[in-house]
Image 1 (tube, rainbow, N blue to C red):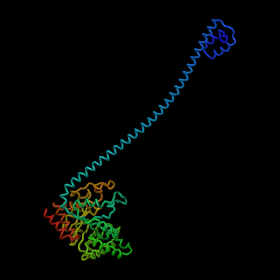
Image 2 (image 1 turned 90 degrees about the vertical axis):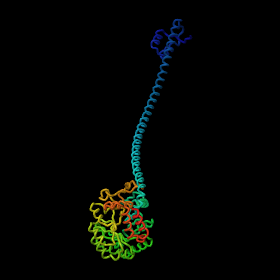
Image 3 (image 1 turned 60 degrees about the vertical axis):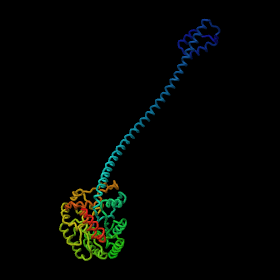
Image 4 (image 1 turned 180 degrees about the vertical axis):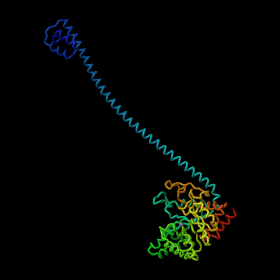
Length: 458
Ligand SMILES: [Zn+2]
């Protein structure tokens, strides 16, 4: 081994004791310049150098290990922070998934509930269809004419209190009416404009007819038009047009309504009730009359004009037994019965006193339905499923809206409260009465044939 300097033993011992490479480097400097060393000293130096090398090597290993540890530490820290982050993200995702799952569960419950309600509605409709099919053959013998239907009312256009709830549905309403035994309907006109609408509607189906006239509560329109005579002429010309088309079958509705004089004063009502007999006389048409809480004046005006009209019906009768008898004293006058005539037990007593030969039936749709609370309801046999207007379904009636198929219920109540077992016979008599007044041209052929057929099957 070649050495470039001498190192004293005490310094070497110190270097070994300290075990620090930098001290050895310091010693190395001092070795430079030494001249000779003994063999023993050389061995010691070698040993010391070996020790220093080994210490240096260990130091370097320690340093390298420290570096690795440091690197490992920082990489572990990074990993931990990444894991924390990913854990946080998974936690958020888990919470979001839980919330979504709970929303979906709620939605599922709603869908299930809706499905159940649809199923039960469907079941009612199916049940109704089955019973309808069963009844169909029995129903064919019952023939009815609904003499009062306000098809010009917004409800048949789907409008209730100014709000559109469903589409116009007169054709659906008519299908129900025809399938229950109604074979004609008279659409009511209650003002000049409404009479024009009624005629337009009547022209859409061969089984529809209409009236032309002004309702007592709207008689102010004569004077408000600025020229009452011209207004009258317009009504007359509309009536003429409607008769030529085979659609106008009566003048009306006209009459007196003292329950609603806030719409039109008594004197105006009386003046234009009188005036409308001129229409009936000119056109040789019967009258479709409205009388409410005004029996005395009404009968007085009828008496004064008895030569000017062939026949008439006081529709939607709600009067007393005395009112009834006053009307019946006119032998060309009939009484129209609807749900409003069948509300109280006293109303049923009054109806019981009307001979069926002097009676007609009607609905006055969309008003005057027979409600569950009405006395007449106990005699009702035919029921239809109904739904609220907001849940419109063309397979169902609209709750609270009367329609012509329900004239069958009126027939049932009249039969029930008068104790008439054969409803078909009753329907034929009422049908005949209606034809006598509004469809005299059919009396000899169609109506009489129907009545004969009806009676022959009793
Ligand atoms: Zn009326």
